Image 1 (cartoon, one colour):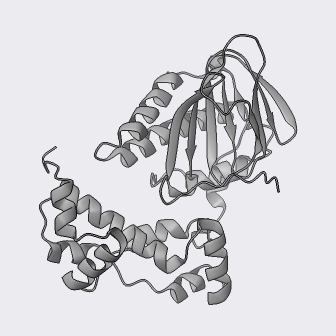
Image 2 (spheres, helix red, strand yellow):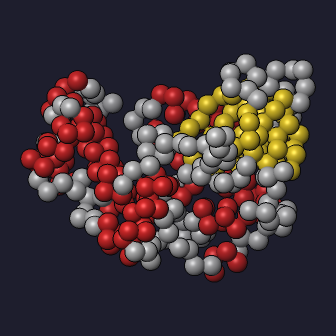
Length: 293
């Protein structure tokens, strides 16, 4: 069976940034869709892109944005080799907030099919160097240095703001969006809540209530969307934070267990060993990093 849905493991790879094109394999890109937002920047050559049955021709310096669930495909439109940068990310998980603008995910949701918010943006419209942003994002994801996720989110947020400013000049009204209530309790945003409250006691029943769903329906939909149970995801988030603290700090296990939502040090050790096969102490020793780095 041929499916258009492209499964992306949002837990292992919350962000993707890479170079693609005619010389990088798996080209042309067949029609597909995913829950991520995707942005493509043409570095070299000419591309023919189809998005939701609309065709676009992109030259070097042009950018195109695919909203979540948009069906799109990518082809070369000339004999010259095609090279482009790709950014994929869950816009719901960008933790950049402002007192003056609503959440970015809400604004871009309202921009879907808006005639003043064209997904193709010409190189002439940008005031800043978009290529530098793409290059930096790709380097951050490739190196995964300390704090790379924060750096990536900052770069992508800058890019999205640049796109919004262009849309605003074209007539896209972002002011009235501020009056629209933002559904912070939807399934697509519950990951942010879990991330922000993982150090607390979290019950799946309470999360279901926040999403205005029954427990069974919430559990089913969460597994369909994220590929594992909500309980396992909460544990995954906590263990991810444990690993960060083991690698980049000298905090002891008692402190780490308190900061990451485990009942006590013993609970942390048991859970860590069950998931990794080694103890936190062994993990820290095997992956020793200077905390001042």
